[in-house]
Length: 275
Ligand SMILES: [Ca+2]
Ligand SMILES: [Ca+2]
Image 1 (cartoon, rainbow, N blue to C red):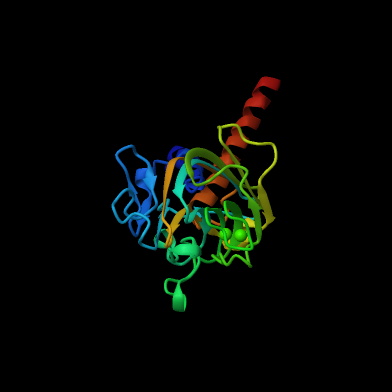
Image 2 (tube, rainbow, N blue to C red; image 1 turned 90 degrees about the horizontal axis):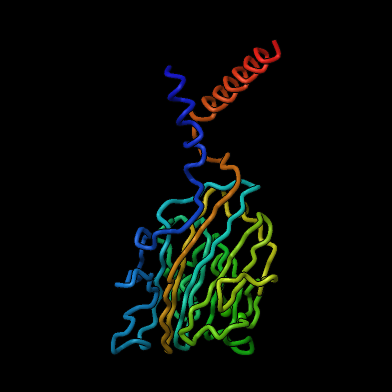
């Protein structure tokens, strides 16, 4: 066995599912009409800018193609700039472990691209946690809302938490959103600048590891009888924490052996200095 090669590669194998930094939107899997426009923005609405804009209900989704391994101590921080115009329905940021993987998509309209359609076709994206940036909301609940939904259940009466957005979501202005998870609590912040507010707009206790050992990250967009366009202008994602659930049969022993060797060499060196 070539020991130096093992020592070099083992740590990289361990963190291969982690990420920190900007996501190249053009590398995401784009589903059911989501596209990248000439400005490099991810456009979630269908037929954006076309004459029938606003008439066709539908949903889109876009996901980072690779799932991320997580453990009970994993956390993530997502930051994205976006803008929406129109009246319905909105977009979500979603983390999920649906068997459809990067192809997952729900129904349009008030299903927000995460809930199921009639006859559960398409199925809701589940298991999942999503943060809605919902232009329409649903009476008696507020329009212009930010809500947290679980397992794609976007029914207005069954959202896990809801709040009136502190910024007007449907005006076409660019906003920055921060969606964070500390392992136990999902929190969402929003501002009309890139300064993160001290307090979240919304938060809910939803342990990340309850979704399972790996998750996908991305967005959904939905339009209904009233139209809206949704643009993701930028997307940064950091996924932290041990990825001990990644099945890497060879790298763990190699790393353990590598650390042992480094420890031994360090001990030898210290001993030499002491002598
Ligand atoms: Ca809602
Ligand atoms: Ca609501």
